[in-house]
Image 1 (cartoon, helix red, strand yellow):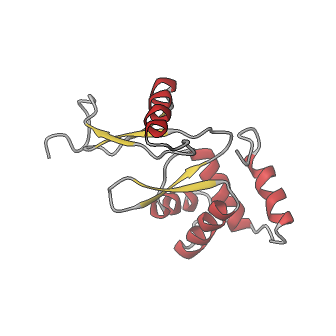
Image 2 (cartoon, rainbow, N blue to C red; image 1 turned 135 degrees about the vertical axis):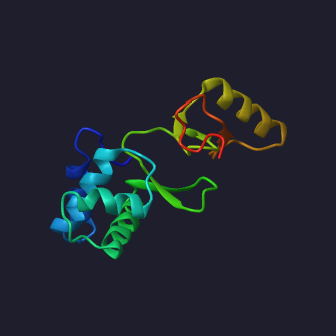
Length: 151
């Protein structure tokens, strides 16, 4: 994709410079934390993690940094029917799909060639050329320690 997982901060700084934007200590802390976590994360969750490094970081700064990461192609917004917008780092990832536990909300990324072949076939059957997809599959994970199991 747009950045390299090997050094996403270098790619982020280069993109900021190309866009005529400045790098700030707080913005760097937030972006670095986001890249390190490499998870589907909400603004609130990233705020908690970033504050472990810089306690004075505010919600608005995290929100604006995530918005910038999306605008610059380093993240995508995701909504998994839990009422929160989550942000998915984009490193070198190809397009992928998601399995989501309806109890603990764990998110598993997957990419399956057989599924893609079938989707292309379905699209072709309707006279379309497949250009993208957005698959979220909801199920119950087998984890006996699932925090919401039986709730």
